[in-house]
Length: 291
Image (tube, rainbow, N blue to C red; front, side):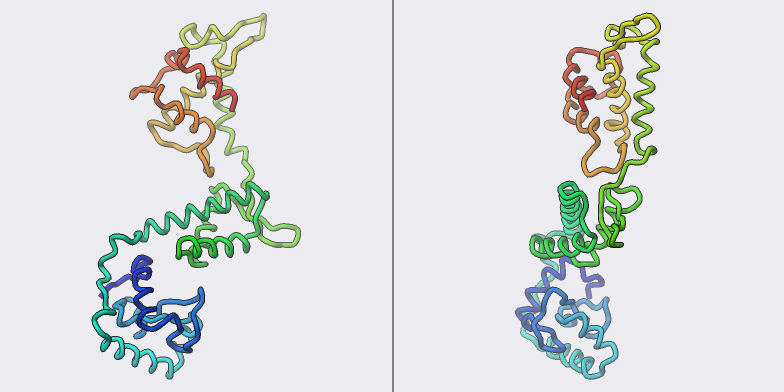
C-alpha cells in the first residue's frame, strides 16, 4: 500500500484510470473538467492502491461523505476493480522517467515567479485574481500540473514581507501585485559602504589607489575607480565566501552580477584592495561605477 499519493503517482495513474473508467465522474457519470480529483473509494486517503482510486468531481466527492447511495457506488467499484484483468494494474514503481515531486514544484514555482515578474515589469501591476487564474491555466496547459491551491501558495510566498513583490489594494479595493518599494533599511548598507569609501580617501596609500586622488586645498578630487575598488573588495567575500544576498530580488543585484561575470579575475584566496587596483580590473571598475 502506498502511503502518499504524490504528484508523480497521480501522473502515472491518470492514464490508467482513464483507460479503465473513461474520463467521467464515477458518481454522476458526467464528463470531467479541470476540477477532477482522485477519489479514495473507501475514504482512506492513505490507501492509494490503484483499485481504491477513481476519478470524480470534487463536488461529488464531498457529497459522498453524507450520501449513502454514493458510498454504495464506491464499494461496488472497489469490488469491480479487484476483478479487473491484470493489464490495468500496471507497475506503479516504474517512475524513473517521470519528474519527481520536487522537480515539479520547482518548475511550477519558477514559472509562477517569472510570469508575475514579467507582467509587473511590463504593466506595473497585475490583479491578484488574474495572476492566480492565468498562472493556473498556463501551468496546466504547459506542464499538466498546478492546482489553484498550489499556485496560490507560490504567490503568497512571492509577496511575503521579505519578497520582491507585495499585494496592495487599489482605489476600487481590488488586490494588486506590485513591485515592493525599497525601504531605507534595504539600501542603507550600500550607502554605508559608499560613505566608508569617501572616508577612506584621506588615509589611502599609494598601493590602494592614491594615484586616483588629488587633494586641492581642503577638498579632494578623485577618480571613481577609487570607490569602485572598495566596493568590489567589500562584496567579493560576501558573494564568493559567505554566499550572502544583499536583498531579495528576481535577479542578483548589479554588483553580484558583475562579480560573477568577472569571477575569473579573482583567485582562490581573498583578493586585496591593492590587487584590485591592478589594470586587469579596469573594465570591472568602469562597470561597477557605471551601474
